[in-house]
Each structure stands twice: as C-alpha cells, then as structure tokens.
Image 1 (cartoon, rainbow, N blue to C red):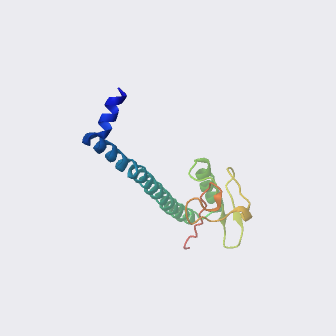
Image 2 (cartoon, one colour; image 1 turned 30 degrees about the vertical axis):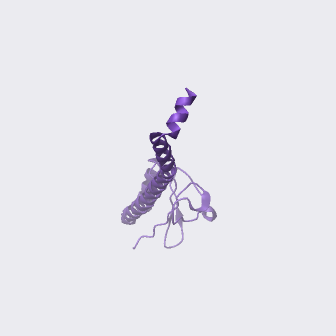
Image 3 (tube, one colour; image 1 turned 90 degrees about the vertical axis):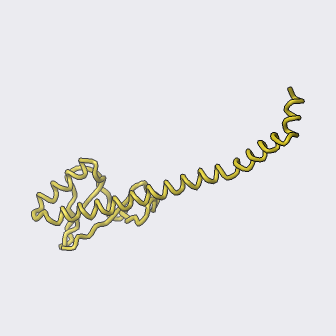
Amino acid sequence: MFNRLVQFAKSFTGRLVVSLSAIHALPLPALFTGAMYLIKEGHETQFVNQTRIGSHLFGALLAQAFNEQRLRSLLTDAVMGDQIIFAHIVTQRGAVMEPSAGMHIAPHRFQEDFFFGQHDDTIYYTVMTPNC
C-alpha cells in the first residue's frame, strides 16, 4: 500500500494533485477571510445608516407632538416596544424629558457613536437634533 502511494506521488498525476492542492490551500482561507470582512463591514454600515434614518424619523415624529404628555407617551412606547433602549428629550429651556419606563442613563455616560463598536460599550448611541 505504501509503495503505491510513493509511486503515485512520483507520477505526473500525483505531482499535479499535490501542487494544485497546495496552490488552492493558500488563497482559499484568504478569500474566505476577505469575504467575511466585507460582509461584516457591509452589515455594520447598513446598521448605522438604518439607525440614523430611524432616529431622524423618530425625532421628526416627536417634533410634531406639541404637548408634554404626548411626547412622554411616544418615548415610553418606543422604549417599551424594543425599538430603542434609551431616549430623552432636552427642551429648548434645558429641561430633560424621559420615558416613564425603560433604561435610564446618566448624562455623563452618554457618548455619541459615529461608527459601529465605538467606545466599547456594546450600545450604539446617536443624537438627533430636530430642525424646529
């Protein structure tokens, strides 16, 4: 059995199989790693874009709510509906409105993220300032 393997390795077919295997063994992991990197970057970019668009639309909706009770209700519904994990509104007078339920974060802990995974806190923070 061993002699047959040695003969096959010395033959043209055997050398061709070994060399083609070696040639393909090097670029395939690099191709796979590169494809996974591109897919990951694409998903992160899509997440950031979707989050920014969603926060802008949510801010536009909040800007249309004129009374404080309606604003607080919209904030609470968004937090309790798992659309967002944290939100608060700072009015033009400087008052802070928060939802009645959900996650509350101290203002000094809030750091806006401009790209995915910034600040190593597993939360993507965004700030939306309405044009009103």
